[in-house]
Length: 149
Image (cartoon, rainbow, N blue to C red):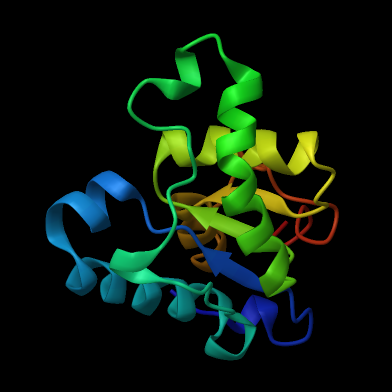
């Protein structure tokens, strides 16, 4: 694993702390692990943390079945707090280790025209190892689609 691919690109990333994993289960130690891995794959200088963060981070609004509830207006209104929090970082990408967070935050960026991309953590791990396939780059922006090809 290496962040060398991002030394010259200087693409910035923030990370979403999933409620189920961080806030409800393992707490700050797993949030610290998440940041350790994130910094290892994107470069510490390219990581921008949200505030509040870790166990105090805001919920994205997509978990607990809300993503599938059929109430997109309410889900997006609740998620606006998370969208604004991401926008404050000015990061190009929000890393989401949770599928519900990924779908919700991707939708929030599109709905509120945030301009940031949402990417799974595993995508960046594979990218940093030089083993991300051409067909696994759906959520990468044009600034990253060619890395390692």
